[in-house]
Length: 167
Image 1 (tube, rainbow, N blue to C red):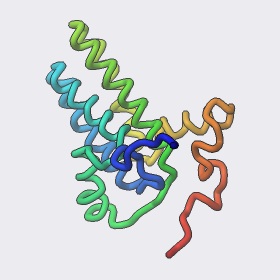
Image 2 (image 1 turned 180 degrees about the horizontal axis):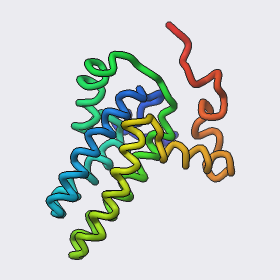
Image 3 (image 1 turned 90 degrees about the horizontal axis):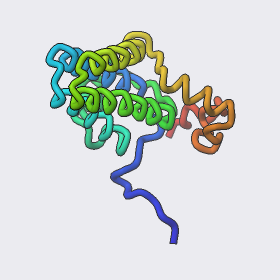
């Protein structure tokens, strides 16, 4: 009997890049609030959002749902499909940063939490404005070095797999 995650806890592949960029914009807004308020509660909300997206993509994430169902279709009005595994890796990095900020805030080192979230804003800003996903760049680097096996994302190495065939 093979073990697999319940279907509710899978990350989509491929991912609409415009929805991902929209989510990054929403992350920027919440991250700015986190820096201004400097409260563990807001850092916790930021980390929870990343956790939900790492676990299941946009399925349980309010930001993910807003991006997929409202912002991307209404604002961008198009889809650009990209491989999912690098986006999940990027969300994991966001979880590490926001989780670190939460812990720092709980330890009473709010200024350090603000710096960590500031770095998160830079990364999310690059994604939102330019479509440059630093987590995806890191994923590609690690995959080329053999640290992440090619089987994790075959489409990342095979251009013919990046765009699904039209049905």
